[in-house]
Image (cartoon, rainbow, N blue to C red; front, side, top):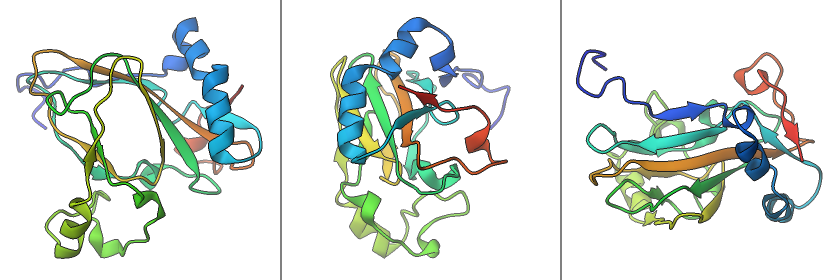
Length: 194
């Protein structure tokens, strides 16, 4: 990336949102969120990770980039890969402004390491992956809509070709029994109990 190019300093994320304002803290630990997460996890205490997501993501018009197919878990380090991200639309999210696209059921897939590039993005040039990518579904959201998805779910997004910035509040959660591995970035900050 050329740091002197137009748009190079465009903000893409507001990090550590949980600690920035009570509204972020209240949303991240709301009873409605806890109830759904408890059902999805099935048992145990649920914690909000301060180390992953915990941000407002943006896609700026004109300066956004394509987000290639990936799994969030690729750089996270926990005892198990069972984490859930909660994505809340702060405005309209459409194909035009780069809404999420997902590969339904992909959190259950086991893929060969050769299906990924060096940065652990799903390679789109392989015939075996092209068949998988044909299952992609866009997930347009209205303001206030919330999407819950497993950290192994493949997802991507296109550029924002609209004239409005897209904003999304995103947190990631895990069960207390699924601890971050010590001395990794997943353990930098303590997780927050509800």
